[in-house]
Image (cartoon, rainbow, N blue to C red; front, top):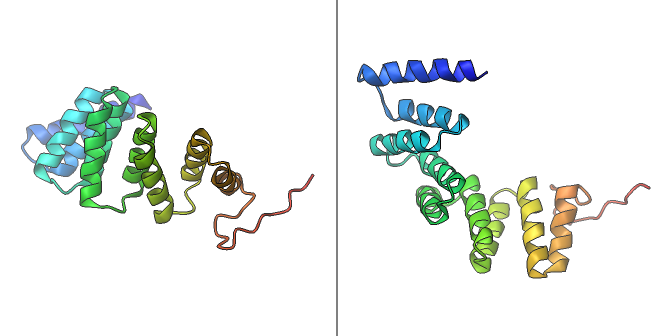
Length: 169
C-alpha cells in the first residue's frame, strides 16, 4: 500500500518539476504526505496549494489537522478559522474547532461549535458522541443524555420529535 503512495509522490513531483503544477498537484501531494505522517512536508505542499488557490478551504482545514498533530494548537485553530471564513457551513472545520476549543477548555466556544456542527448535519454521529462527552464534562446531564441517545441509536437521527425507542431486553 505504501508503494502506491510512493509512486503517486514520484509522479506528482515529476509534474511539479515540469512546471505543470497547479494548486491540485500540491494539494494531492500534501495529502499523500499527511497519510504518510510527514506533517512538515504536508504543510509545505498545502501552503503552496493555498498560494495558488487561496479559496481552497480544504487545504486550510488539512493544515489545521497537521498542526494539531504537531501540537501547535493555536496555529491549528487559525487554519480552521480561515477555512470557516471561506465556508462558515464547512462541517469538518466546525467540528475541528469544537474539539480544539474543548481541549483548551474554552467551553463557550466549544459549545458554540459543537452546536453549529450539529445544526449543519444532525445525522453526524461522531458529533453527537463528542458533544455528549463535552456536556457530561460540564455537568449538563439532560442534554448529555439526549445526545447519547442520538449517537447510540435510541433516538433516530431523523426523528424530529425525538421519540425514544423501546429498548429490547
